[in-house]
Structure formats: C-alpha cells, structure tokens
Image (cartoon, rainbow, N blue to C red; front, side, top):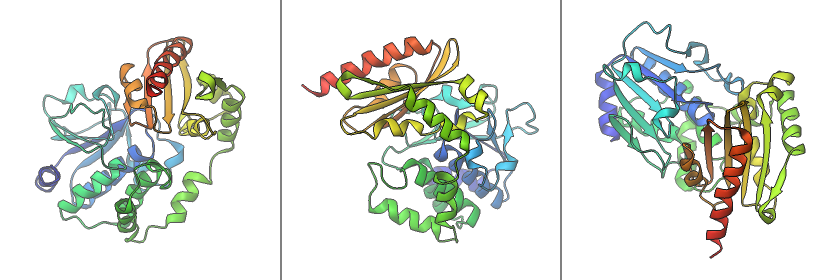
Length: 323
C-alpha cells in the first residue's frame, strides 16, 4: 500500500490534507509533515482544520498555512489525504461535499479504523501515523527535510509518550534516529511539548484533580471539565490534551477518564488504560475510537449520562477481565 500511495503523490497534484477533531500531536505532526513534503515536491497542497490551530503546536513549521474550514478553499482537490482519523465522522472539517470528485486516501494506525477511504493504509503496528507518513515518503523517494522531520518527530514522541508507552521497540528508536538526521533538535521539541505549558493548563489540571472520583474499588478514576472552565481561565481546548494521563498514574488504577462538557447535550471523553482494559472497544460502542490504551469519544449526550454509561461499560470490562 505504501507503494500505491507513493505513486499517487509522485504522479498527481492538488491535495487536500485533513485530520481529526481535537487534533493531538500525531494528528498535527502528520498533517504538517505531509503538507511540507508535498509542497517540497512542487505539489498544490492545502492543510485544513475544522477549528483553531492548537496553541501547543504553534512552534511547528507550516502552521500559518493551515486553512480553518473549507469555505475559503479555492481549488478542487484530486485527492483528500485523511491522517490519523479512526472514523469517517471524525474527519474535521467534513469533506462529504468533495467526495464525488476527489479520491479519499485513509492513512491511520488505529485498530478500530473500518477502512472508510477509497484507498486505505491502516497499520495498527505503527506507534504513530507519522511513522506511516515517513514510510510513504521514503517509498516515494523524497529526502527527509528539517521541516518534515520536525513535524513527524513531534507525532512520534507525543503518541509514544516520549517512548514510555507500550508498543515501543528498537524499531521505534531507529525511526526516531532517522527523523532526527536532518538536524532536528530533540530538546527544542520536547521543551515546547512538555516544559512550556501555558499557566492556564496548570489551572485546568488543578480543577481536574479537585474533581476526581475514585470508583470500582480504585480501578477507575474519573474527572470532568466544562467548556466554561476553559473560557473563564482563557485556555484553549487543546490545553486539555493528555491531562487524562494523570488519572492513570496511580498504583492500582486500571482506567482513567476525563469528560469535558461542550454543551448541555454534547461532550467528549478521553480514556486511558494500563492495558488490562481495551478502552478502544468501549469508545467504539459510543461512536469513538482509538487504541487499547488510549481512546476518545465525542457523544451527543449530557456529561451525567456519559459518566453513567462509561461506569457501566468499564465496570463490565473490569469484571470480565477478572474471570
């Protein structure tokens, strides 16, 4: 499949590059890395998000070229490249209006991805979608530049938790070394991602920890935030990215969950597991997706209803795991 996609980007022009709602480091790194490579190859390419660019990743090259929404799109793409999107309804912005005239290339590493594209490259073995982008560019014969390396490395280290998450192997470090070769400064990136948080993120973390619920005999820790919390302290929604990891860090906890209320009947949830519980299976039941140890949900229901539903699903999963 890498060969087929490599041939497409070598032979064709006019690419729209998209990723998922509430983009994380792998999503943004894949988006900007692919965009930078396509531009270096002389292609017409436009990266698009459905909402404001996340402040956490503003140090990455190409961020000023990102289009917000499709209203000002001034060309007809031949190909739409969807990166790190586990389900079609999570592509942001929605590209339904372009599907009749453009081929959708679905590149992802989530095991729950159903293969919604016209062309699908789904590899759950990969630590990040940026790994798959690297493999495609390598197959296309495109030399790795500093800009592309910086973007792809960002996706790799965020989705591996700086190489501390499960699934990291010697091949992960081999890829990291390759991505650093163009002169990428490891500390420049890790400093921005893990040592330069806005003060508002610290306030969000305090609120999250103040509201924790220790449930299911200590195996589940839930907390919640509201959109109003972000607005009151002047925080971007992206500043809540990966706060949920703190809820998983305590001995004996199997699952951590953070519910964020967006409106009375719309909320999202981030789930993290130490591996005993497959949170991607739980997320899939609610229209979300992800990985065994990390998954996300956006649901049209109240936070209270989502809390009750998650408690039931996670409780059942924990009970089954003990049999």
